[in-house]
Length: 125
Image (cartoon, rainbow, N blue to C red):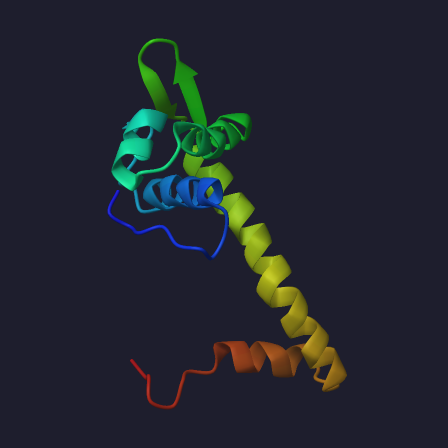
């Protein structure tokens, strides 16, 4: 929990993203307890209800599970759920606009694939 919160989007979404990022980089693995709403609230100096909103959305998506009296834990399928969701977001935010621009430029699928596979000039391995 060392990332700073900012004004880029609602705080509860940033809390949600922090947890998802930690699941993706395996800081929080299957069965790991995540910080409580009060721990997030104390650390980031935010309202516990705000942190709770982000955590509750993850529970609703099946990424976290509540164990009464013990806390919130990462589910067995959490990483797959997050990855699937983020792949869809990537497709919506990057691939669809890319395909639309390629269409405007009358590029063939082959040209687009070639460009995707092209190595950057100054970035060759």
